[in-house]
Image (cartoon, rainbow, N blue to C red; front, side):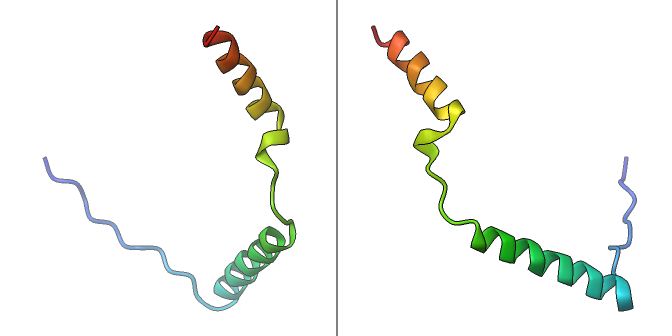
Length: 56
């Protein structure tokens, strides 16, 4: 059974400008936040504790 080929949605005009502006704003926020110290996150600490208990 064949799958129907659908058109690729394309943005024009104000929609395209708004989409690009939102993408650029997200990229700026990402660049401004700085590095993340993963060793201090709760998930990593929990995983290390579980791993240490498994190795005993």
